Amino acid sequence: DQQVKQNSPSLSVQEGRISILNCDYTNSMFDYFLWYKKYPAEGPTFLISISSIKDKNEDGRFTVFLNKSAKHLSLHIVPSQPGDSAVYFCAASEGSNYQLIWGAGTKLIIKP
Amino acid sequence: ETGVTQTPRHLVMGMTNKKSLKCEQHLGHNAMYWYKQSAKKPLELMFVYNFKEQTENNSVPSRFSPECPNSSHLFLHLHTLQPEDSALYLCASSQGEGYNEQFFGPGTRLTVL
Image (cartoon, rainbow over all chains, first blue to last red; front, top):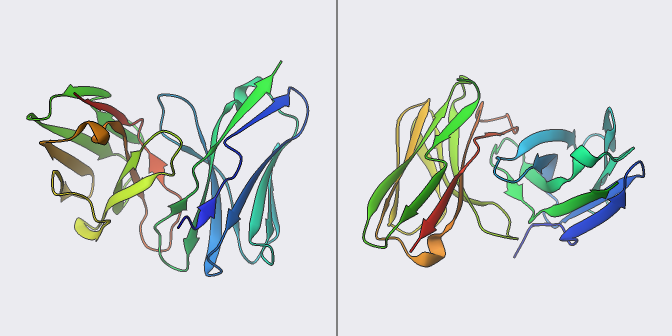
């Protein structure tokens, strides 16, 4: 059973608008969450993270929101740019365990 | 070289061949990982090494054999693979326990005929 779920396989957004990518998890012991971005023929690259002691973390155009009661996190990209077209993975970890549990990814397509 | 490098980038092999994938990290990290990525699936963790010691083997078939001679190098030896083993194999590294951010190599696209 998948502990981290990204229910939208793909998302299409107009350039300049907000992109919202969602991630749900089932393990209440997860306390650290990360978003990775992956271009074709490249490995995933770290984008932004959030600890469970926070409910929001912002880095430039990227903001991650965490709702612990709903076991839900989201990544907001504002404004969306063509270079943001990629597959976005959500990942989670528990305590001092440095291993990550991954979602299946959401393919984001930014339309010009 | 910087970051995490993987060779070869592409590999086509028959079911009876033996080949090896190589990963090298230039980040001074202590933990290294092998992942398998199949289309539209989560990244599947295969093996974890921390300070050269294998700490995780996620029920991976014995036709995949990892080797970690030092904390900078990681190999994945392949033999008698099946067509369903065709996938992107990713290597990653991290500082180790207490540090969650992993740095990935570009991957090896493996095709088993």
